[in-house]
Image (cartoon, rainbow, N blue to C red; front, side, top):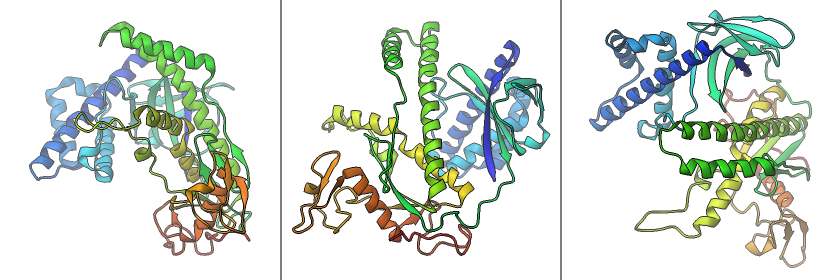
Length: 406
C-alpha cells in the first residue's frame, strides 16, 4: 500500500532559492488556472486539465519565467487543481495566498528519482533541476518511490516520498471479536468505551507566551515589510512544533486503538462546520461569539479530524474497520437502559441516569463512547458504504462487521 516518508532537507543557498522560485511559479499557475476555470463557469462553460495543459505549453513560449520550474511539476499543479475542482467545486477551491499558503511542489515521476544513503544520518536524492539534495535519513524508505514532494514549513524545507511499501491489508484482524467506540472531546482528546483516556498538551506555557508576544509584534508591523516576514517565520516555527506534537499524538493513539480492535466506531462529526465562526454579519451579528471562539480553538487544538485520518491510515495495516455513526444524543443517552434526556449529564464529567429504577452512573465521556460503539449496527463506513451492507470493493467478504462484543 502507499505510505509517506518525510525527511528534513539540508539545501544549499542556491537550492533554497530555486525551491522558492519553483513554489512561487506553481502558486501563480494554480491561481491563474483557477481564475480561468471560474470565469468559464460564470459563462456556463467548463474548463478541464487537457486544454489548460496545452495553454500552459503556449504560455511558456511567451513567458520565459515559467521555464524555470520543471514542466511536469507545473503539469502536476494543474492535475491537482483539476482534482480539487471535481471533488469540491470550482468556487470552493481556495486561492494559494502568498501569506498563508505553505510553499510546495511535487515531482510525479517517482521512479526516475535517484536516492542514495550517504551514512548513518544522511542521504541524498537527485531531483530535476535541483540536482543532488541532502536530507536527514531518519528512517528507511521501505518501498518503491511513486512521487516526491518538496515543501517548506517553519522556515525549513522538507522532502516527502510517497512509496509503495508492498504491505497488504490483512484479510482478518488478529482480534476479530473486539470493537471500541471513541468519543472525541475538548477536555480529553479521545476517550474509548473501554475506559481509556488519551490526551496531552501540545504547547508549553513558554511557547504560548512567546506566540502571544509574536502576535503583538505582528500587529505592529507594516504589510510587506521585512520585519513582518521575520515575525511570520518565527510564529510558524512555534506552531510547527505544536503541529508535529499533535500529529505524533494522533499517530500513536491510532496505532494503539487499531492494534486491539477489529472495529473502531467514531461519531460522524463535521469538524469544519462545528468550528465555524459565530460572528455572523453586520446586519445580523452572532451571539456568544467569544465563547464560541474558545470552543473552536479547543476543537482544533485537540485535532479531531487528524485523529480520524490517523485511525483510517493505521487501520490499513491491521485490517481494522473504521465506521462512523450519527452523533445525535450520544452524550445524553444512558448506555445501560437507553433513557435519553439532557438532564442525564450533570456536568462535563458526570453522567447519572434520571430514569426511574436505573440510576446508572459513569464518566460522561465513557458513557458516550459506549453509546457510539453500540450504534455501530447502523453505521456508515469511512469509505461511504453502509456498515451492514458494504460493497465488495471496499472490504473483503468475511471481514469483521459492526457487531459489538456482548
